[in-house]
Length: 84
Length: 469
Image: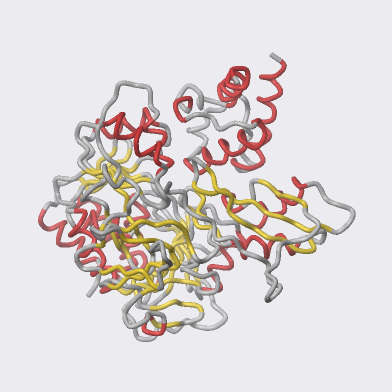
């Protein structure tokens, strides 16, 4: 579980630093699409995961549920890491 | 000639037909025409005169389209400013393109409010721009085929010619509904203007994920998809049971289509992806409507109005792709360089490397110039190196594209650093301050020296090959 929490914190820091405006405080529960997450944002998140965790999230995993918020995304990344 | 005539023709024929659908909102051609008329009146009151160069920094919306046509109605020139630009990049566009006004979504110092949305601010360029007597509609700040030439200038006549040529292949008509998900600041003329000239309906969607995209497409019975391989990869791997029964044409553009995406998409939807080659200087050059299943990795035969030849081919037939045809750009803006001084006997040398098969299908395999294509966004290494080299700890740098199975290429950099080394993350922060996010190198490699050519001592550029194998 500590894995998932650490990954969540890393993803959150990344999104806050690189994707969203500083004025928008992103939490683990923020609805990403509603916050303005677009296709280039998605490309950059996928690249961040690949660079930091060593794998490309398969497209079939990139669902509404997985991208609901950072917590859900971190859970997906953690699960895929364990499956490897 | 004015491009507004193309839209006016549609509006008078089908006033009640939907021009745009966004969420639950339907905007008819008559309503779009009314919005344009209101915008035109406000811009006229602002003092907009013919030939004024206006920056348009606005996200995808009906207002973006209405503002563009209102500016054209007043014979002003539209210069798109992508919303992801940093303030430094916006300033570079403003100064290099000698903009005399800018329209944005947020109010500025002395901006005037436009209804229904937008703010316009007057600017004073250091020197007034010279439009060389052309009837200019549009200038796209790029880049072009080389880093040094900025701003592709397109007249109303040029845009009309390329719209007519492109639609002979795309065959968009009033019965079509197009799903739109690409940024209008990068794609507008042989797409949005073309669709509106033919009376099609455009569904604006910000959906990036497969399921909501498919639901929206089916809700409005979309017949045409126009998107990048990245979008199609998401759709191809969707695990729902949604299909695309109303789609007749799915165009893949902006970068090379990976084989697994092409195969998975056909398997998932029973519909082949049709690759297209569009170049900002030329418009739509080719479309693989003839054999998208068998030759999935071809960008197709040239349009009937166009010719393609391979310049100085090697033994394997690969050489630089040159194109001749109508609707070519009028000039580069900065420095001003008329088309005639760029073309070679009417042929435009694209900088793309490719070959033609016996049936005249064009296959692209790479580029002569060191342009990086990140999922369809063009990145010029020199621009990023200029920023990196400004950091006090960077002695020199080299930016290159690394092949990527899902994105075509990703941006990476090698840097030679002074002591003590800053953290790589600090250098990336520095890039983020000055560059649009997609240009920031994904990885920075600290090296002791950069590869140089033995002859001239210049930094060696690898012209990455597009993966078609």
